[in-house]
Length: 304
Ligand SMILES: [Zn+2]
Image (tube, rainbow, N blue to C red; front, top):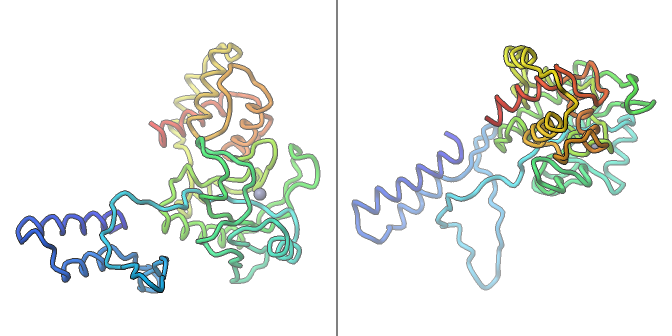
């Protein structure tokens, strides 16, 4: 049963017990409520620590009535590449004014570094926007992956491939995080998705499809939908009506774009980011049938 389910069953048990007993809830029942709503760590089988004020003069009681209106502060998982090697990455991400929760090195070993506690804010996203929300450092977990990125122009094809063992680390780590915070598939994103034109990591060689198919992490479209939409690609793709609709679809998926009917710089940058994520074979920022169809297929699946 998930956390919401646990809370719901706890509330339900209060209802049942109060409706068939006296109006005063006996302490025994409250104890049961607490047990029911504690989050049990699936690996250690231990309850998660409760973080709350501890005061000298007052008892901040843990015998609390849990509110049903609550969710996780963490809503996004953001992936990056460091563009520098492991040693330098560790130095920069621990000693400079930039950080991430996790660093996945590029060694074939069993180590993943935790640099910032998940309950704290890491500084990895900067000025960013996704689904209308700004400053995603507040609401995200950031994973930095050691990868040298692109030493040439950001739009050149000179990106660095990710070794298989590194993707396995990222996959298992991401799967664990997404599960614990119930992060929506469309909220597993790259730095480039939330800062189009400013950042390009984790780059077009990051295997988002593999993350989806092998680890169930993030979003991916259904091929049948893509093919269906390709067959519906309109003839007039230069009209402002067509472009406004495409921008509306991009915005609906999460990208921060205007809906002005023009392929301006902001829109073009978002298309590049979208292509790097979902159609990495070509990331020229131009709308084409496949790009258009994939966006339609994604919205059909995730934002119906
Ligand atoms: Zn980044």
